[in-house]
Image 1: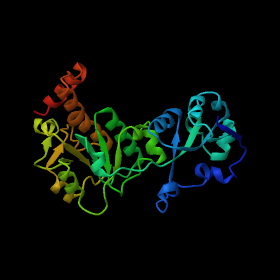
Image 2: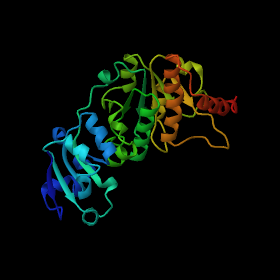
Image 3: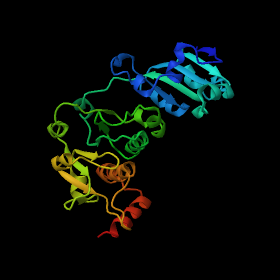
Image 4: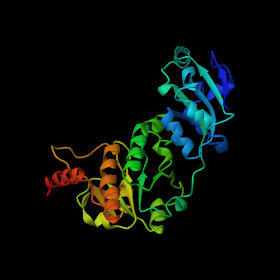
Length: 296
């Protein structure tokens, strides 16, 4: 049974994780064994528990202890639960508590790239994507549209940053991910694992994203770049393909999160459906044909 503690202030050191520690302090690079993250809402917390994340404590509105938080607390016997009324929590935190519930959890250990990609056919590579909202949206698209794993450069935003987790709707716990090694050439690493790489970028020799050659590649890494500048020129040069989404009305590019959804649908989900012998949903198939016909 959960241990319930009614609180009226945040003075207890056990509440530092909610009241005083920054995201960088939670990450705790100096002591990764004790690194933490905070999950918000019953849905996200449930998905984190499903993925095997270890809860440290809960902070929630009192009504949720026996309400929508009850099923989660039953899964976490002995984990302390700090509870207060909504107005008290709002005064303490300075903002309305999202979905009325937070959970501090230990950060899971990340696998090696080779282990993560052992059975993957389609992976996404995020090069220095800095915005947590974009990170969360990309993970949500990856989960929905058939991407097997996500690889990130260390300079990008943390997928377990609170906003990234929230925007992803907890899909950061469903799509396997890890960081690429900081030392060495990650493109060589992927090539050694049997992947070809496709840079999402604007160049004269870019292939259209609906080019059949791309879907036929057995193992493909879809490489997406940072907001604003996009991919580094040396990254594009080292990729096997450069790929673009055809557009109209003078628009030359999409936000990285939007571009990822188009790329994952075209290069991952459609390939999965075709390889499984299933017909693509007729509505989406018709939309795709109409969209790409405009650019033929």
